[in-house]
Length: 278
Image 1 (cartoon, rainbow, N blue to C red):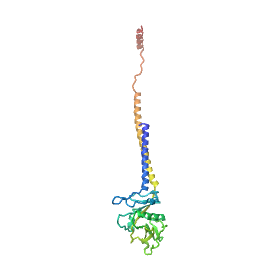
Image 2 (image 1 turned 45 degrees about the horizontal axis):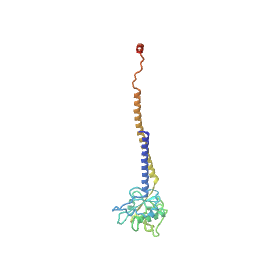
Image 3 (image 1 turned 90 degrees about the vertical axis):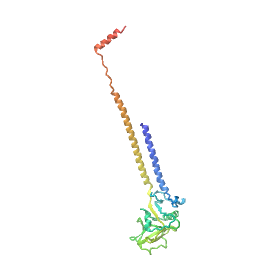
Image 4 (image 1 turned 135 degrees about the vertical axis):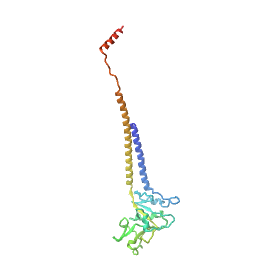
């Protein structure tokens, strides 16, 4: 294998790695921009994915959402999973049951008016009619106030004017969001049931996924180049060894040395030459 062939092999390896790297980056971008559309029992996409274009343009596509097979909707720096439930069946979830749908993630927490509006505007794409969504909030007996499950203080508040905790035990106080008005209401964590569940988690930076893919592809490129160069070196060494062996054998080929004639033989030759002269 000559130098030109080695160079072609290395260039081919680099081109394949570049294509793979571009494909990996494209898949990372598509996984953020286009969440998988759930399908109904008939195989057609359900209403969960039919988001109005004008509203979907406001979604914050700045990171990665969990890739666990469920549809996560990015907004700002957070990701939201709206539990659709079974078609044509009444939804009725206790607070404890609602938490099990999130599989390690938290129930919905509202940190701003924009986030509250996002949930209200996206809800019709998931559920029909008015829905009361469980909030990931509990009554903290130490501070004697409501807190989010992530131990964050409730800074933004949107309580309904008629909402009151006077009829509820402090440790039995939870909250729900009305999708029709966006207002919050105090409800019982034990006795009340609601028909809406939204799970929430923070987005992971896009750069983290790209850096992992980039590091892996870089390692593959380096290993490929090292392998090609190693094989080329072995082939070159074997070829050179074969040529060197032929040269050494030729150099050591036997050649009889030149022998000078003895005096008597020299005289005989001279006499024969003299007789042959006319």
